[in-house]
Length: 107
Image 1 (cartoon, rainbow, N blue to C red):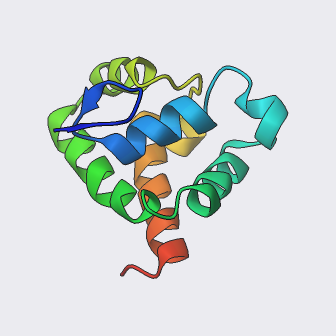
Image 2: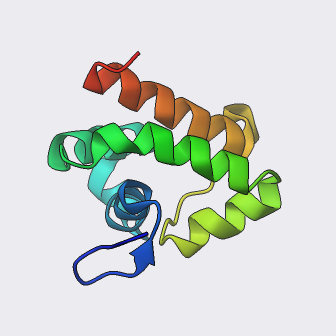
Image 3: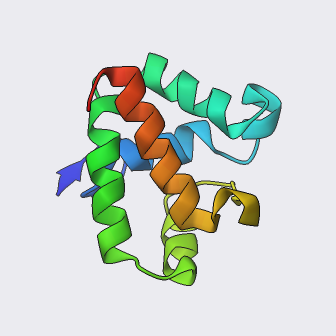
């Protein structure tokens, strides 16, 4: 586990930063949509972004149900609720990981 400066001890520091700093309660006003928020995270946190896909895989292994994922994501500071069209939290997190891999040159 790692301690983020000024933050909690977490084993998902990239996700903690993305959720709390980019998907906070005003994220829609700041970014417009969740994908622009993700693009801002990738650009603004180049030291953390490459770790996000692996952290998401860990999150999906540890929190298998939608209810568990919702509780976890909310607990990380995110004020975002994925739609059913996005596949709920599982589908949305999977797409987040895919987009970050593509943007950071990971296969």
